[in-house]
Image (cartoon, rainbow, N blue to C red; front, side, top):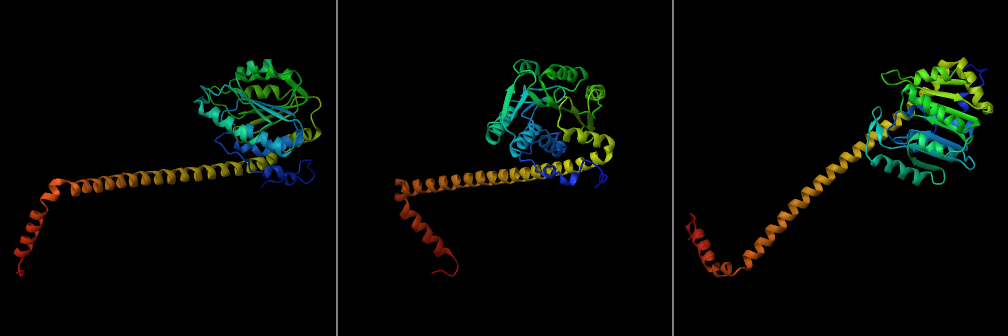
Length: 309
């Protein structure tokens, strides 16, 4: 593992929360940023978190878990999404929203809230200067992310930090990297490269010193900071892969058991039907009437066998 200089203000061996394993491990491109998210919530202690673009909910649940475990007073977390998908992330059905809603209700009552709307519609009801932590992860075109940032900037507090996902993606249709290059020059900032990229922007004038110190160290020693958090993030990704493999194996076994159970039920039904048919035959009048003839025939067959008689 790459180590930071001993004189660094950032001491990774003291970040116990970076070793937490998220309670909710759903499919996501965000797994590798969970350790940093845990640290950031601990350093920032945001009272209000808003996420623009939630999909399966992993990043949202990670922040909710941190708010809960750090016992941030009066904390709230709002996930804004249409839960319909788009041409970049793909389209999906209502089961995704139902799953996110069920997890949020069960695990983070009193903290998590889901708002099913567009980002612009949701912004109308949010007071100015009320958000301490904003995560922008909606459509990834340059104009899209620029619009989201400009629309929601007035909602930020003086302590606010904004994180942008996919700052490393340069495939067609992705322009977050371009917008990040511009906005990162205006405020204290640092961008992780791993996990598709995560830009960290200290927007407010009163951001906690611990966050600002981290940014200073990260900019001075980007390779070391990147390597350390990437390693921790990889552990989360492996945990998810292992959990997914176990779930797939459990599903395979359950399907196999269900198939065998169904086959057994079919065989049992056939045996029961055959037994019932036999009872009907034995109870029938013709069977009773022909009983003497059948007995005589059986006796004759025995007498015809060699050595009998």
